[in-house]
Length: 421
Ligand SMILES: *Cc1c(COP(=O)(O)O)cnc(C)c1O
Image (cartoon, rainbow, N blue to C red; front, side):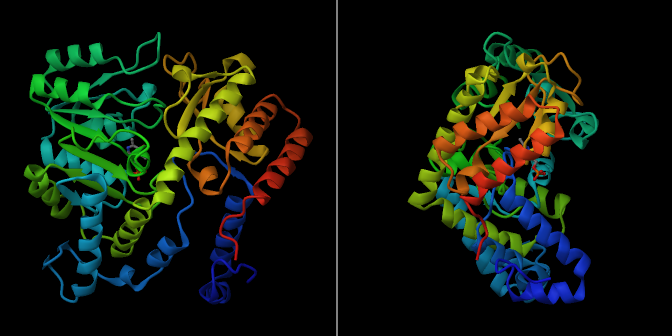
């Protein structure tokens, strides 16, 4: 089962030893190459980063922190973690960085552990308005262990209702105020949130998982100067390995480090830590800064092209890498639109819009993001084509038409190859 120069000689070894799994690696590679990847939280990481993930660093136990490990033999991995920490602090102008969280959700658990006790009140963005599961969903530890009070967006402009946020903060005196979301296309006013945190004596926590890559590329303002703590994933726009990270003011560094280890994790995944270091170096290059700007420009054109097809961009458009589209004008719900796009090789997700009349399993919207297609090298002409492909897919309940659309999608992606030889 060879046939992919991308995976290299080790893949041939895997093919002989475990053809079942090798086949999945190959078909997933093909899926990523052929279909249109518009999931707003996904990206194509670099081959250099893949090299760290498939390395011997994966074998090493390194509980603790550089110079203070619970295991011997950590000299080499210590160097990698120190480089990752230094690069994170310098890229974001942060006083402290912890590069060990296994994921965004793990990073968030550590933030709760560092600053709060079970039962404390936390103010966070409501899930139906774009907040994340770890911001208080009843099925997550956050909603089970904490008293979460939610703020949302205004109905008229679909932007965060800062007046409501302040009123709720004064009324509930939260220990911590969380901003950041999974489906919020606009910029967040960190200065305003800092002022509210100061007014009520709350910790300012920004969950920057989605947009931190745009901050790294200097394409949007940074929360780091304002926030006590900023948590994020490293695999979304940032384009690094799958993982999490936490930046904070120096005064909170010890509490964060203790919360991550031994608070909620054992050994860090050192191959991913090395991959985070490589990603941070990539993000510091002028090419990445151009990339971050292109991601936003592409998303604005994609949103405009969907509006030209009669749909509505929530909050009037986007200032980031993602757009939330109200598709009620098509008389097709989010669930069906997601399925039809999938059949046409367009991978996106259904998403609730603010004040959505449909249930979360159905929804009236879709969410699209341009991080991956921009990495592929697509630009604004392609975004216009993608807008029309999405509209045609949503409008069609005919399998043959959707299969033909899939052919058009594959012609488009073939012009922007990823992970080729
Ligand atoms: C993606 C995301 C997370 C969770 O990250 P995982 O790596 O999937 O655990 C947390 N918060 C926000 C806002 C996110 O967008």
